[in-house]
Image (cartoon, rainbow, N blue to C red; front, side):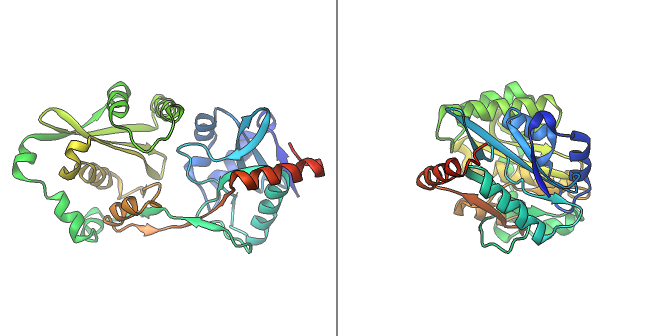
Amino acid sequence: MIRRVKYKEIDFKKYTDCLENSEQRKYSASKDYLDVTTNKLWEVLVYNNYEAVMPVPFVLKKGIKIVHNPLMCQQLGIFSAKDDRKINEKFLHFLQKNYLIKVYYFNETNTFDSKLDTKKNFLLYPGNYTEVFAKYSPKRKRKLRLDDEVVQNSEIKEISYPEAKKFIEAHVVGLDKENDSVALLNTLEAFYSLKHLKFLAFYYHHEITNMIATYSDYDTIALLGTFNNKKYIKMAGASTLIDQVIKENIDHCIFDFEGGNLPSIEEFFRGFRPELKPYTVIENSQKTLVRNFASLMMRGKFF
């Protein structure tokens, strides 16, 4: 049986135990991660006595609850000791029948009988760095061979959140609204204060030209952001930073690129020769959202 459990009613010990011992385990489904990214606006669907769980984040618009994966939370979905297609279908049907869904992303391990759209993600699995590097594309290897002048006048340094914030505010791209930039910075600051996040910067002539933000879980390093000064985009500082993190961690951690749906981003990530790991998604248009809202109200199923 699947039941809906509101945030204040969640048994977080059982939830965490289920997540940590699941085949699909994802850092993004942890309580700390969801609390930060959703501002505690999430609940959970529970199968029997926490044998399987499915976190459900939402936003409130004019008092209406709308399911929506938050910024910087790529995958959620169903978590259980063994991925079970039949149980996954039950969760999917429960979600679609009882919630108003704008955007919900499952994880790459979840399988379904229903046909769902997919998005791309890329992962590098733990291994010997020399062997991992040997698989990089010829183009990526060339990019990582910096000119002598650049080598002599550059360095890589870990920086603090205030330093990172200043660079992000000056060079962030791809966010449509000012509120998105504020949400991004607030999320990064919260993760930094929890000691999960690091900012690594590439300096050229004592000026930051590129920076990445990486989130550390016990077995995963996730690339949460890449930020570049456009003047130096051809200098390959971002590639150098990512390679540095891979070099330091790939012997014991998965490196999660956290995306790859835009052609330019996909091409960039593929240069490191990661494995393609598609994940299933539900995405509804505004028109579909309105129609589904009316249907839920008529059936008295709107939470």
